[in-house]
Amino acid sequence: AKKVREISALSRRIDDIPSSSELAQYRQAFCQVYNQSAV
Image (cartoon, rainbow, N blue to C red; front, side, top):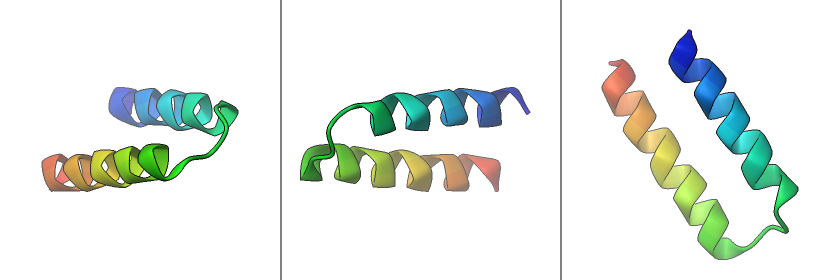
């Protein structure tokens, strides 16, 4: 549950920043790493 909160905070922080392809790629990679560690 703690990790989920951290991810929510991170994604909110990322959403506050003007969107760019670099941020989108970082977010995608972050989600992939999280999904792998969750399994």
